[in-house]
Image (cartoon, rainbow, N blue to C red; front, side, top):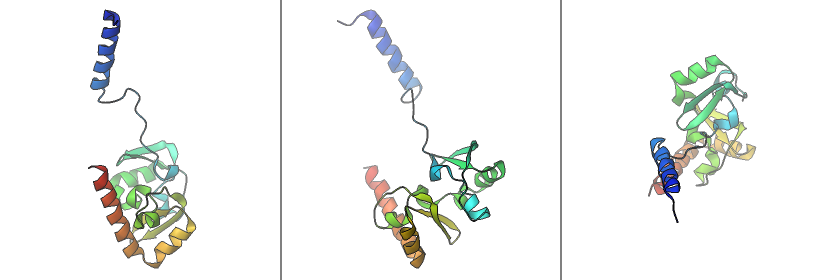
Length: 149
């Protein structure tokens, strides 16, 4: 038997969930590049760990930066510095497979940052970067389309 008190609690909980537009304890946005600074690949030509104090939310991911200047550079031009394909492994994605990347395996090609799950993928990408990037973009688009259906 449901008492008035229980009914009230259920109604109050439902109202809170609706008012917050979702669950009461939402998960934080995923950490991009495992916390590495995307700008450092361009400015320092190496992966550098970012710091929590220089964090920025962009495109559904949390990006961390080695310093405030890098964060401001990213804010001013995120498409220039953000890794392609949301940081997924470009080589695996070109084969239709979604796989997390290792920020230590990377290439800047045609002004874009690409990251890879392993060294072999990085090496294979450099053999035909433009064609591989096009295939990866097509596969990602198809994956997004099938996820929304």
